[in-house]
Length: 476
Ligand code: ADP
Ligand code: ZN
Ligand code: MG
Image (tube, rainbow, N blue to C red; front, side, top):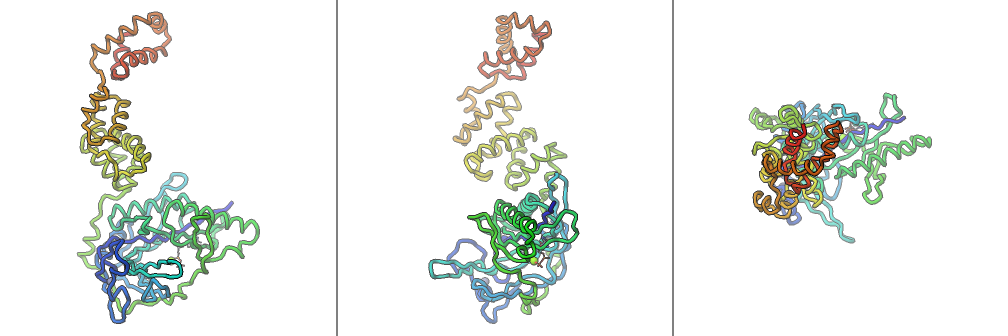
């Protein structure tokens, strides 16, 4: 009955060494106000100089999303007074941003590829931080002037899950491009969510509200769900015009609700004008060349894993979603094991065990080449899959032990020797002659019984593939 419309504005903190307009370091967790200088303190007479590394990183993002990278762009002043912004304006790009008209592809709710437009990505300076302690408020300007890339999507998402999918792809992309650490807890990747509804079939968009500054996928999801429900309810109660208007809202983590913060400013409220202290940005050939140094992008990697390594799309996507996971996987493949086995053991077995201990792949006690070595022992028949799982459990606790020693210690070496297995099989068949007769008379499902008995008699050590082969030949 209703269609949900969502557009996202994401602020990505660029991982440059220095701030956007001065040479103060961008390092985190320093003594308050120690990373400051006359420029980022906005002292009169100090002049900003644009950071080339930030420009190149913004450009690299532009090339990665098939955007137009403007050879000339400008910085503008957006006026607002706030204690953690000493200049009383923010330097941003409004009239001509460095990156225009890009795209990102997501899987929509039906699993089809969907293009999301990226209107623009512009550079701007972050504000400082206010800290409130009882009656006192303090300001720390270490973050003031840190470069942000604001990435503005079209109103193209149609559900909370599409919005999350878009955010995750963007998050993965900026980490692959190495332009941001995109650490959400530390606020290096945060987003404003614009939400509206309209009756299905209606052309015009409904009134949108903007929910500011959310820094987790879960909260984005909750905020959208709450907001959609609020707007639909208002519509159904006939009070849409009164209760849904263009405003800025805040998401309250405790209650899971959005709350009105202020009416949405119009551009005019900000008295935007070109910053007279900053010259136009003109990109050089050298900068273009540097910006075009782009690693294999996530979507290309997924496609390659599917075509070259024959992985399923789902598995390829899981591995590629996290840069370090893909690195781990590729390191496993250096040991010349089957890609399919590497993927299954990584996703189903190692990640499962890491999850249980709340570890991520970068904290894995087991190195890629050790997991690969374990898999090669399955591939060459030394151990069974079941045995390998036991060894993996053991390795989680004792990551430095040698795999051959563990196999020995846990008695997991498989018997693949024909003679030894045949001896067991013959014993089983001899003591079950009635069943053998039934089998030969056509009761074929008894085959499983013989396999089970043989495995049991070998205490699980017989190579199951061998058992199958040898039983077949004995019974035929
Ligand atoms: P403004 O200039 O007021 O910030 P923009 O055109 O830049 O507005 O849009 C800001 C964000 O809001 C964009 O991400 C856009 O996709 C989104 N948006 C615009 N209209 C709607 C709507 N009706 N519903 C949901 N999102 C919208
Ligand atoms: Zn500074
Ligand atoms: Mg905007």
